[in-house]
Length: 101
Image (cartoon, rainbow, N blue to C red; front, side):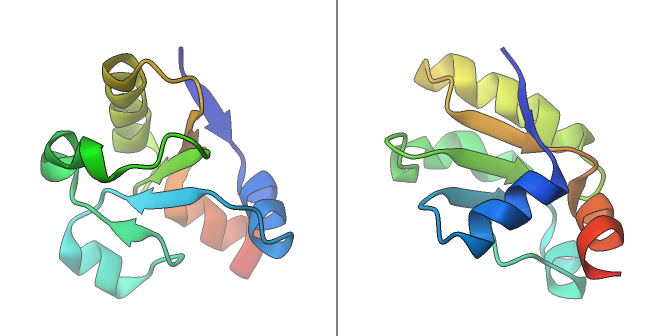
C-alpha cells in the first residue's frame, strides 16, 4: 500500500521535532544542488541498505518529482512488511515550491 505525505505535512513533522527518517533517493548531483536534509541513499542502493532503516519510526522517501520515491516506497513497504513508509508528494521540487519559495 502506497502512503503519501504532503510538503505541508512533512514541514509540520520537521517543525514539531517528530522522530522520523527522511531518505533522499536522488543522484548525488541532484542532492548537492538542493536538498531538505534527508539522508542520501541513491535509488539503486536503497534495497542494499534496508537493514540501516529504522522501521520503528516513520520513513519518508523523497526524490526530485515524486515518481521514484513512489516506486521505492512500494518496494520497501513490501520487503519490510511495514505500513509506516511514505513518499513525498511531488518530491523536493514540490516541497521547495510549496514551502521554501
